[in-house]
Length: 117
Image (cartoon, rainbow, N blue to C red; front, top):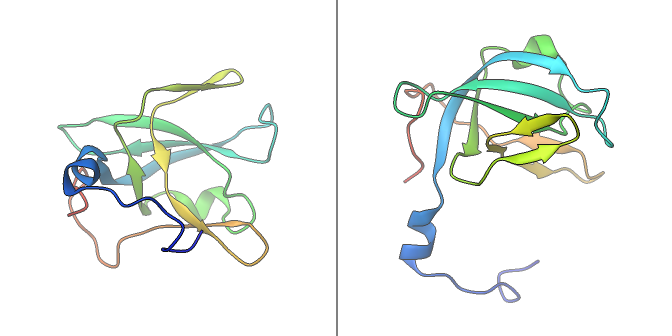
C-alpha cells in the first residue's frame, strides 16, 4: 500500500497505539502454529511487565540469536488466542522481498518499556 492509498490518521489516533521496546528473555518452538513461528517471552519493564507473543520470524532468526535482543511491539492490543497459545502483544517487523519478516528494532539500547515517540 502506498502513501496515496492509505487513510490519513490524526495524531490522537497514533497516540492510541502503544509501540514499546522490550527485551526477548526466552524463545520456544511453536510446532502447533499453522505457519512456522516462535513463542517469545518479552520483558517490557516494570510498568508493563513480561508479555508473550507468537512471531512468524523463523526464516531469518534462530532462537539463540533472539534472546537478549530488543524488539518493538504493540502492547495495547487485546490478547489473541493462537492455537493453544495466548499472544499478549504484537511483535513488529517488515516483509523482505520474499515475504519473510525482518524484525523492527531500536538502533541503540533503551530502557525496556520505552514508548515510540
